[in-house]
Image (tube, rainbow, N blue to C red):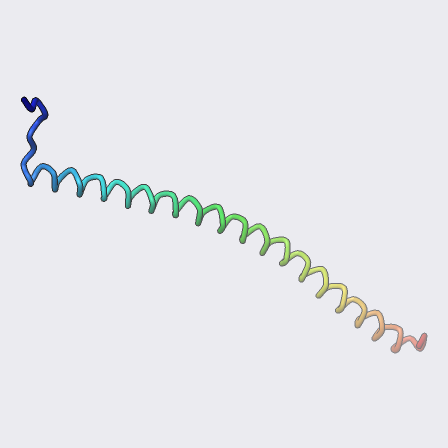
Length: 76
């Protein structure tokens, strides 16, 4: 005797599709979380690089300005 529940093909198809959709949604959600983490890391890196670039630019322009002033006042 077989006491197992009998499912129609439609019920089986619905169950398979539901599990597939939930799996895809879970994968997309995980990917979105990973992308947010990566973007946060990239933003932090860009911010630190921006400060470094600003410091280098100001330093170079400062040296050029100091050399120009030295030339004007006849120190060089």
